[in-house]
Length: 556
Image (spheres, rainbow, N blue to C red):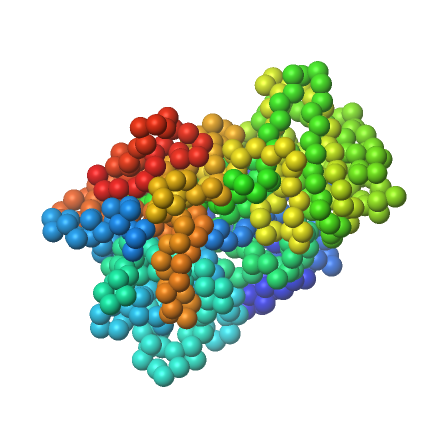
């Protein structure tokens, strides 16, 4: 373990660059440190003073890590999970199964994560935010600190456990998801997690670096996490489960609007790879963007342009948007300011850069055109507004090469800008966040379990590659959880739904690997089992973009 790399990787004066080994991108010998992420991906780290300033024009789109945000026992009765726990012939509680969490950390001292004898059910914690110091990083990783089950148990015997294991969860999101998925039963409070006997693998993500937040105009106080750190965390969970020979359920309650929503991002590729392996299952929340007015769907007849109006309510530092079109579609974009000044579309929509100062508005606009992806080559038009004036900004999307004439535009996810920016004519479909658009992982939307109706903010499908998402929906409104201080709280959002679904997946995995069975289950098989057991509304046609394949998880 190189402690120099630990400090260098953590520094805001270090650029993080995410590279696919098999791509044409050549490794740069100026990289000070290199972190392998499985067999396919590499994160390289550069001194910012030694390389050009971060921009899509210079580095390309895919190599810049994207920033992800958080997607915030009545619920369990709605899903049928309690029936699986209490049915004598089954008694499925997640025993022998790992559930892995990549999130804000965990309050490991809480009783809900302990066995009856007081020992921990957490097998290991990798805290990326704690410098290595005298402790070790996980084998094969260059930063952060790993704490083993033995060390956690030793800490729990102390009056002040965090003096030995200083892992915390300042936000509480990771603790809440873990308690929903696999919190211990509390008979007095009437609480139990979906898989209360499962063991936990936990990664506390280090916060996104300030320079990257500035690039994407994310407020510094807003929780955000980098794509390369999330990918390293997932690889850590996979490697740990493999070494210990255990099945793994991955629960991911994070998302972003960056990307084509086709399942082609770096993180989506990694999830597809791991989620398709035997004795592995990945569960991803679809986000809470359906009513956010952050998605626009357009279609040109091949001859006429499409006007897209964007409302900037107040002057702000900046914002960006991404236009995506499936290959071989090509478009060029002109921009008109609220004052009427036009930035004309350039003639060549290939890999190119365009910028203009809007003098009267005091706004700078940059447009980058790129073909993105090794397998699809979809068109990206990345438009960045610096110091935008308040008012209606209009994009004129002009067809260059079209077959279907379809395109999609996404604004950043809710909470990822200092002021809200919305489309005047939004489309609620294809509002699922990345990486829930990945093909193989189970994408989970949300419902209100009390009323039986859809959670109105639940991210909708399908993906632009026409993959049906969400796979199904689960309770997402007022779900009982345990907060970081040990108090009972409620959580609303599809991240809560993903935690419930992860617990259900652990039950199915336990069933497939117990009582002499050695069933080769993965995300596809487990997802199909759950879908077959779903309740269906006879007045609804399935599959659909809101409910997915089915409505509510129930025992089959």
